[in-house]
Every structure is written in structure tokens, then in C-alpha cells.
Image (cartoon, rainbow, N blue to C red):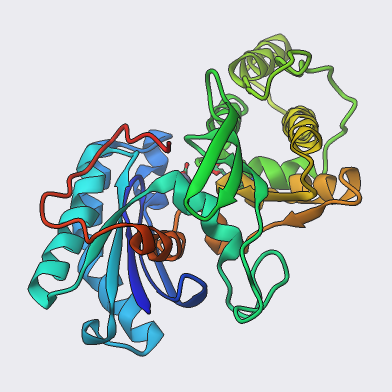
Length: 343
Ligand code: KG4
Ligand code: ZN
């Protein structure tokens, strides 16, 4: 079965063709980062308009890259929520119109269910090291870390999840972006701080590990960001030397990694699972990938390709295939749900 995925919940317009929920035939992504850079964050109205402009060219690119036409597609899967309502509407209404005009079924998909599914996506092999033929689903613990989410979720079947914990304030990607702004770096801050952290001194500053001592699986990152703000203030805002910025990046990143991996390990031990997947934009972080490999020996770790970690439509097509196994086609009453709940 060929599924056309459509994603437009935030600042990436994306279309992808995925076969049988597994093999990615195309993954076309249009990022709006350049448009939002000068505002230091995503401006919803600008994002919606940019989605409108990008939609048709990316739809055509995804089909062409996969070597198929719309006639070959068996199902459309579009992100229904959560996300920015104007942005969600552009992708979802386009998907509904395409489904209606070509007589195809359609399903609405939860954006985080898509991120959770990304370890199963395969070009040659999936993030567990399986080829598309030999990959039977096995449960796993997932750390979803992005600009909007920081959650530990037990995935017991492709479409069955139990949330163990989540952030009580900022998401970890949001904290990266805010810390980058504090030290005068561009947007989005995650990839830039990741690069600078590699040259910094991990022991330069003592930063807090918020709520690490609490007996739960929640996260908190806003206090960590405030601690960095204080460091910057003490340093004197006018001259931020490169060594200072590198050291801040290294210490901030180490604090994030420490809390994320400690809580993930504790959750995995309690669940009795040896399989942990990292998904969402922050899962691209090189420092995190290295630390997880070193600090979680004996675990089977899944790090999806970066193009499947940040927002994309392959993950929407992949999970959409499984939702369609359990559901009817959604019909034209399908509507965007900016606060859609995962469970
Ligand atoms: O999953 P994503 O593309 O969009 C959301 O659903 O939020 O994640 C974007 C977030 C941004 O906050 C960005 O700074 C962060 O992921 N990010 C990173 C890295 N690459 C992207 N954070 C840390 N290290 C990275 N290498
Ligand atoms: Zn996302």
C-alpha cells in the first residue's frame, strides 16, 4: 500500500511517499527557517502563508521523487494536530481536497504519533538495524524531544502509547533556542549550540539538573535556561567571548543530556525494556547520541536519520498506514485540532 503523507503543523511543509508503513520512497521537506530567522522564532501568520506557497511544488516533488503519480497512491495521511491552527489547515485541507478529487481514503494523524513512529522508517534499514522485510514491530521506550515536546512514552504497538512523563514547562528544543538567543546566536539554536558544545569545557560552570531528584518521569527546562541567563548577566552582556559561549553550550548541553538520559534509563529499568528510541529535532544532537551510546551499554538504541527526526511527512505516512488498519477513512469532516491529545 502506498501512502502519501502530509505535514504542515509548524514551520516545515512536507510530503512523502511510504510503502506499507515502512519503506520511504520519497521525503520532500521545505523548511521556513530563513523566513523566521530574523524574528528569532516561528511567526504563525508568516508560517501559514509560506505553507500555501510551498504546498503544490512539494506535493509534486514527493510524487516525482518516488516515481509515482497520484493515481498510484492508496491512502492520504495528514497531520491533524497538535500545531499552529493556520498551518495545520493548509496541509489538511489540501490533503482532503486531493483525497476527494481522486477518490482516495484519508486519515488524520497525531504529530507526536508520527515522531514516535520514525524509528520504524527505512531507506535500506530502519533505526533498529532491520531491513523493511524482516522488521516485526517490538515495543520500546521513546524519548520525544523537539521544539514543542519533551516526553517519555512507552510505545506498545504502532498506535498504542502510554505517556510516562513530560515537560512541566519549556520543551528541551525550546530551551536550546532560548539559550542560543541569550548568548547571541542565531535561530534555531539547537544545531549551533550542539556544534559549539564540542569545543567547550564541561566543567566550566555548575548548572542545575532540574527535578532530576523527583521520583517521576517529568522534565523541567525553564530553570536551566534562567541559570544560563544569570551566567550571561554575570559575564557582562557586551562582550561574549567565543570561549565563554562554547563553555556555556557545553555545560547547558551536558545538563540536558544528564537529565534526559538519567530519566530515560530509570523508565526503561522500571518497564523492563532494553529498547530506547530517540525522536524529534533534538534527537539529531551529536552530543546526546554519543553520550547515550556510552552511558546506556546493553541497550538497543534507535537514532532515526536526522531527516526522520525533525518534522517530516514520512513519519506521518508511516503511522497513517497503521491508523488506517484500525479506522475508517476520515471523510471530509476531518478538521484541524491544534490541541489534539495523543491518548
Ligand atoms: O522536531 P522539530 O523539527 O520540530 C518540532 O516539532 O518542534 O524540532 C525542532 C527543534 C528546535 O528547537 C531545534 O533547535 C532542535 O529541534 N534541534 C536541535 C538539534 N537540531 C534541531 N537541538 C539540539 N541539537 C541539535 N543538533
Ligand atoms: Zn515535531
